[in-house]
Image 1: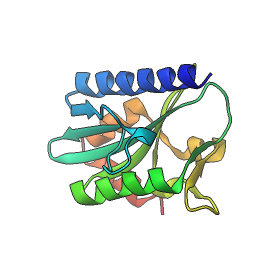
Image 2: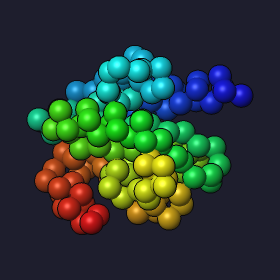
Image 3: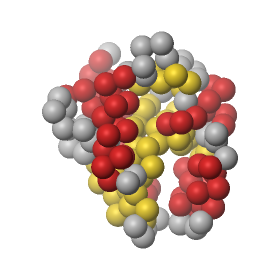
Length: 148
């Protein structure tokens, strides 16, 4: 089960990389992202479009269960984003529902210092095509400013 889950996660990361690359982003997947990385702080995927940097934590879910990102993983995403001047996002892939991108500030805080993304939060996110359209124009800044 764990290997299947991890494989689906890797497949989702690679799909996101391909889609963003095909739309003109400079993009790469971190080869050892996630829990295996102890000392380094970097996200699953980094995408750059004309100097705008986006750091993605990528999650795959087959069902409607909430997504949790623990404190350690969240801190790594935020530290990388701070150092790079990146916008930290959680990219959620669900079968038959496509992608939803969630700015970290939009997620619900957990008591343990991590974040939770449930259906309510997902509904407020943006689809991948919408993100691409906004990121390649000036309107993504408006979206990120309006989440607060």
